Length: 303
Figure 1 (cartoon, helix red, strand yellow):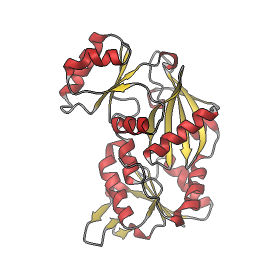
Figure 2 (cartoon, one colour):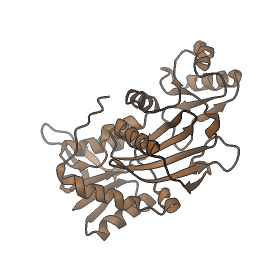
Figure 3 (cartoon, helix red, strand yellow):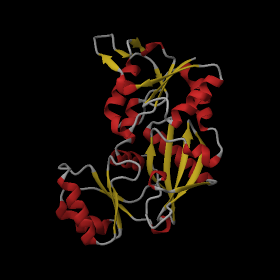
Figure 4 (cartoon, helix red, strand yellow):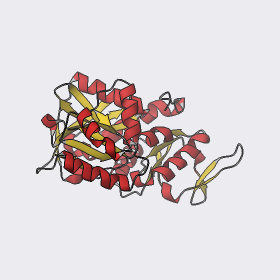
């Protein structure tokens, strides 16, 4: 099978692991820097090229799109889909997962447990919004932040108003700023579940090493292997399905009312392999081998 990995380059750890696993099984693998691809849009003749080569020759494509290149990266993936190339993650599923507001709306619609979330473009509503969340402290997020960036813990109404007013100055329509309840029992701790298809392949607990309420490994958090409950596994798979993702890193926290989904990542890192000893890259190649010939599934999320 001819497999293309859309990536920032061959030095990326996740890209290297996918390439190793695919080649060990006899597949032909090319690492494609998607930011250097270009597309030609013509009636009944869409093409994507990289260094003069038409990419429609590939049997399967694995998108590893960085958050800051979402619009361009997903445009390239969409063009490949128009050519009939199998992509393990669809362009629309990647796009929707990168928008925290859209994700929360879809997760809620699917019956997935999430923290109470509110948004408004009117700063005069702040007192009412905070009350809807049960009072301070609250979490304030930028809808398109990643790796824990653009996430603030506001411990008082005064602090919340200051942060929100600053965020609103750079976001006129209000949809890029979310407020969520603070889950006290999980402060500084969350769980990453790596979902492939309809199974959780690996899971780890992430713990902040200081007083930071964020547990992201990019923020210095420490990962340890953890066993999920059946309910947590089902919730992780349900969350990935709600986004339309076949491969996903699902972040959740344990609360007094059960597991709550925080985010669904379309291009999860593979650091979880080191923590858990599980072969995530191999599981993804297995999934592609089983599904590529069937072609891309129709997206049924509808939003």
